Image (cartoon, rainbow, N blue to C red; front, side, top):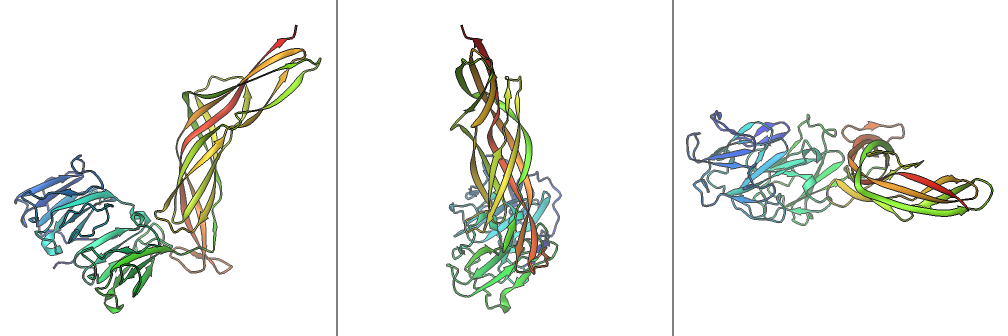
Length: 431
């Protein structure tokens, strides 16, 4: 069996002995029956509706079922197609239980080739599934042989729940793993491999070797000397808890186009029977609110509370947009939930106090108009300061003995906002 190729930062299957000189368009995967580029072929085009993302496809019944020997493909970066022996529509597109031998086609935006005979999957593939992945949120690879050789699986942590054992007891690699590669575990992730499907029993744990966003330092481990060779039946990952976190609030100014036909209108009427000018103070839009949603991306569960400022003016100006100032305030906690994104919905109250003057001996009618604006998709990125009691890759030792790791916290904001309250006041002398 041939050796897998280290194509930083991933390992990829052995390439064909003859480079491919034909045409393979972006998004295409071409299977060849024999070990030459002139043999019978089958094209899988991920741009076609016939092969939707996240859905298993089959080429059973074609001339290439259980017949493919060479592959050429051209997939974008962060797109992975996994071809497998058995087509099993599992609940999630990255669960390969009962799928048999699998081969990961990891896109890099260039034409790549695979020799299935050298990889260990010759004449056995009948379908597969492709999807976009979040490689920057951590991943690792399991190999059936030592020195990162043989069939393997690439596992992206953002697709799996945190702190929960994931069984691979029905995967081809169950009790076959002999080496692992993990250069893109991101601080503060910890990866645990166990010899029982429930996460119990004998285990081995590894942590990040590179600072966040980097993979320059290889991170591989041979399991033959750890007592875990040919024993891995599950994996799980967790996060090292910081002793302190600091994420400052931040403000961003945006322009929100007014939504035609969407406004709250409130009329205030009264009489000033005195001989002096009277200042009227009132509150409008009581109990009225609009919603702003935000999704925060970070290793820990991050809650971003959004507030929007509004002001009061007299008269209704001829405007088509709202100038809005959004402030995000963060709360960061450890989490046992899945994913590295947290979505929250905030209600922004429109209630606002207005002040206007009414002439002596007159009745008045004030119309307050609160326009609603559509907030354009807005991204706020703020550095989070995370302090640990251990030295993680990329961290800096502090005077108090802790280690500071600076990581970005990104919040995507969408929704509606209320404009300034515009007040039009009319007064009529009393008779």
